[in-house]
Amino acid sequence: MSDIPENQPRPPLIWTNALMFALTFAAAAILVPWYGLTHGFSTADWCVFVFFLGANGMAITAGYHRLWAHRTYEAHWTVRVLYLIFGTMALQNSAFAWCSGHRTHHLHVDDVELDPYSARRGFWFSHIGWMLREYESGKPNFSNIADLKKDPMLAFQHRYYLQLALATNFGLPLLAGLVFHDVWGMLILAGVLRLVWSHHVTFFINSLAHMWGNRPYTEDNSARDNGVLAVVTYGEGYHNFHHYFTHDYRNGVRWWQWDPTKWLIAALRLFGLTTRLKRTPVFQIQRALLAMQFTRAQARLAKFPGAGPSHVEQLRARLAHEYESFLAALADWARIKEQWLAEKKVDLQSRLRDIERSLSLQMRRMRLLQAQLA
Image (cartoon, rainbow, N blue to C red; front, side, top):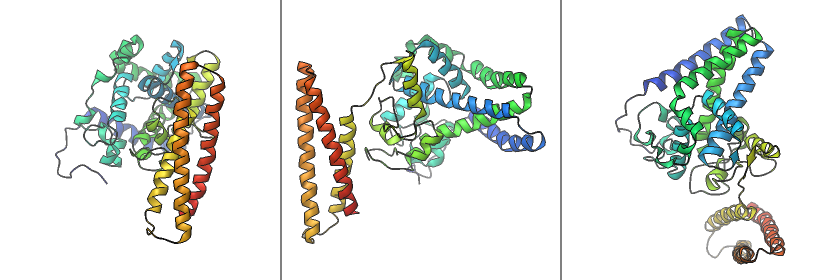
């Protein structure tokens, strides 16, 4: 379903984008099976395909997204060069254009007029349609990337984007084909199929990640957490967390959540190649989780009659008690944090951790309460 009126006139088609998406998809759908059946792809073809696919994906997630769009960490110039090379190869526009649009998306998420790829305009629009026509919401506006425009590397990429995109998308697969003596196989697999797969995997974050999954942190926007999407998007599938805690370098905040982008950034820190990694305090994450649990529990209890059975009244009393404990914990945290900032006393940190542990226990109790209300 779309929130846009049906009779609204369509903006002009962007023919370059439409042809690029149509031709690459058709080439992947036809050439890959044809070449595979008639000639076969070598092990080298598949290995280079996987390498380029991963490099493109991580350049977008770790580079375009978490480094430049959200400034969640800092990276050595050598890492930034690799991000630019493989980010350009991903053919998703320059970092200037990509980051500007993404910052606008976060600022106006779900607004059908201002969000460049609002999911409320339907799956097709948020997935790819927004790039096919000259929608007003998608017009570039670089006023929100003043910090990025100071970077000479990004300025160079933006100025020569077309030449660099052609060089990386044809040159790198061609070079690999010459090295491994299979030019056509490499161009089809590591060139065409890699590009189409990379495109639609990224587009899933704009579309499916706003439609399929759960919202454990906030229901103020349509972003969802989805572990399945996280697997194919290098950790970007934990989208509800990301929209609530935008400046965290992690999307999969739990240790067991699949987020190779997070692991890459953390691993590079061991070699001094990434620094100043931003993390959301545990308390803030717990606070958001508990607040959502209380909101949902109160909504379920509201469906019961005012003078219901005794067990319902007991549940109401338990919920009220838990909520009072939650508010008391928030007040204690704010008071101790203020004291710690003023005095910088290490012993206060242990008291803050005690509050975090108590909230963790409260989340377990709330899960049990939620199960009784289900």
